[in-house]
Structures are given as C-alpha cells and as structure tokens.
Image (cartoon, rainbow, N blue to C red; front, side):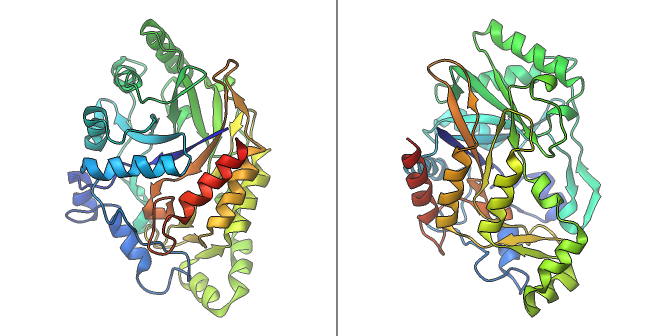
Length: 360
C-alpha cells in the first residue's frame, strides 16, 4: 500500500503568467487573495509554515520538501509536466530536479495537458495558452519523458515507470499514441505504466483507452452539486447565505467531502486509484462559484485509511502495489496541501504517516 501526492512546479514567475496576471505572478498571489475579506470561512485558509512563501528554483527548498514527504510516509511525488507540441511551459523546476538531484525523493511525471484560461477571472472561454498535440507525428515528447524515467529516483510499480496523464482522451489519436509510447520505451528497456485522470464516471475501461488504470478525479464530486443543492447548503448560517447570494460560494465539512469521494469511487471503471483531497479552498482562484472545506488532519488520516480499502492492485509481480492518490502536496492556490502550515504545523504529515504506517 503506497500513496503519491501531486506536486506543482508553479512557484516561480514566468513571462506568460506575468502578462496575464501581473508582473511576478505566482501561486502565492492566490493564497493571499483567499486570505483577504470574508469569502473564506473560518478554518479554511492555510498559511505557509516552515518552508515559507518559497521559490522552487531554490534547491534547498526542494531538498526540504523531499525530507518532509518521506517523514509523512509518501511513496512519490507526481510532478506536473507541461508540454504542448514542442513547447515546454514551466520547465525550470523539472529541469532542476533532474540536474541537481533535489529533492532526493521518488517522483514520476504527470502530463498536465490542458488549456490555460482566464477562468479565475470568470472568463473561462478566454484561452491564454492553448494545449496542442504533436505526439501522433513525432516522438519528441516521449523521448523527453524517457529522459526523466532514466533518473534513478523515478517511481516504478512492479518495475514499470509510472506516467500520469491529466486529459488522456484529449490527446490526438490517443490510443495509437500510447501504443507508440510503449514501443519507444520498450526499445529503451522500459515497460511504461500509464494512468489517467478520470473526471467523470461514464468513461470506458482503462484498457479501452490505452491505459493501465484510471485515477479518480475531483470534477465528478464537485460537478454533481446542482444549483438547488448549492442554494440549500448555503442556508446553514447567515454568513454562508450572504456568500452564496453574492458569489455562489458553497462550503463543505472535510468529512462530508471525503465521504463524497469514497462513495463515488465504486462508480468508476476498474481499476481506478482512489483519491483523497488533503483540504480545499479555491476562493483565491475563482471570482464566482468557489468551494471551501475545513482543514482536518484527523479527518485526512481517516480518509487515507478508508481509501486504502478501495485501492486496486496494480501490477502482478513482487513489486505490485495498491495505490492511493493525494491531491495535493503543494496546491496552495486551491488550499490543497500537506506541507507544514502556520495553522497546523506538521499535523497533516503526521496524519499521513500514521495512516500509511497502519496500512503496512
């Protein structure tokens, strides 16, 4: 039984973000925005603790992240990887991880293949960077992935390097492409294990889409709440009603949200890796229809244990694993983080360590 957590490399400025969001923009701007005003209910906003408002170009920060993740019992980071028809967005942290060896902790690549839009400003139809594909034409992308695979830290299940895809079915000629990836990797002595984000339940089996497994996504749970349910939920207090009336925001308790993920897992095709959300607050990113939940280390520990009972076995040999995905290690812009905070110290890491130790 092992758990991996999604890891974002966005914590340094790039020209594209500066153009659309303001000079020097990073995810920390969203964290500050979530702290301001009255939109975030009490107990839903986290403040960076011992690592501070870091810049991931600093190898010492990444080194400390790896030490903390190991103390929390995690098996690997799923490092978000951005590639669009020959263009690599946010490459500096990925390159630095491969070059300087920090963090000294297992990782695997997760292709975040989606458009970048102005959704945070309520204009989701305005694209700032469009995801494009050339995998059906050339092997440049899989060759780049294999450079990472050959790093000794790269995470494997049953001897097979793991690769995560955020939108696998959006890849042009995706089944043919994934077959080609496996062929190219085989020539280099690697048998890839491809897993893909499952946004909804009414999708094909992993095998039918050229994958080895799905990973439970967040969209189904949050998208299943119709406007009437959101309105009723907001009536629990005058303050929540005011937030709903002005912004259409809605608040969940942590246990309620965790239970929704657990109950929906069985609706996804087998095998699907279950997902545990560490916490949630996307007020800083959304001008309307934000969602929040309280942060509960004890609830997080319980959710990890519950997810373990739903985890499928991946692989067939001595290295087979039952996997759980955690969203996320450092998604501070949406309040999903296991990293130390001012409010809870290392409690989330301790909760993870206890839950995963109990599963051993």
